Image 1 (cartoon, rainbow, N blue to C red):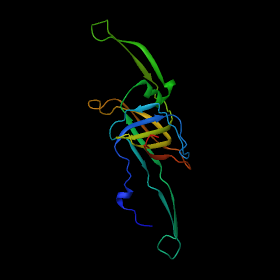
Image 2 (image 1 turned 60 degrees about the horizontal axis):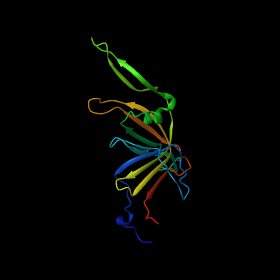
Image 3 (image 1 turned 45 degrees about the horizontal axis):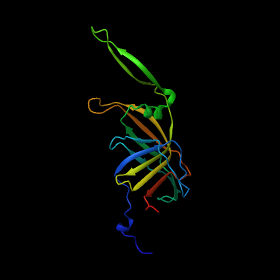
Amino acid sequence: MSTKSKKELKDVFNGLSSLLYQSSIVDLSQSTLEIKPEYDLPVTVDTLQISQDDPTINHYKVIGLDGDWTSSATLGNMNIKFTVPTKAKEVLVLAYGSDAVKDITSLKLVTGADETGETYSGVSLNLKKQKVTGTFVLVDEEGVNLMILTNVALWAKPLYENPGTEPFAIQFTGTMEGAGKESIAWLKKTAAA
């Protein structure tokens, strides 16, 4: 077998244009799949992080020898994190569940001497723990390459740290729960038949 050159090995995924989400898990061990995303999430630039912690190395030593007799490892945890800069009701329901988001049809804000006030409507949120599971599709800038993450489990928190320069956001943080299952895939658009 001849040595593969750098040019032959260049097959990169770079330049994200969309982060799509569907609530169902996809079985990536199948050769034919269909994904129907429910959301095209607006994600803050440079907040998407997908990484795996370093493995824990177990060293086994024996008396009389300086090096390892043998070793084993436990893989590190997968970490997924991104920020969605919106307070859209649909995203709040995704993050916290439908029972945590309630409509407010009318709120009258009366300030100062003017007793007429202004009227507002919107939603209220119960910040409860909600596990968000499903599949994410990362689409590259050209719409040619996909990166699929499935068996994903995330939890949300509100984020409003720099109100002078950054909008209110929901930060999702989590992992993959796909031990023993295919959980990541890379695909390239094929020519229409």
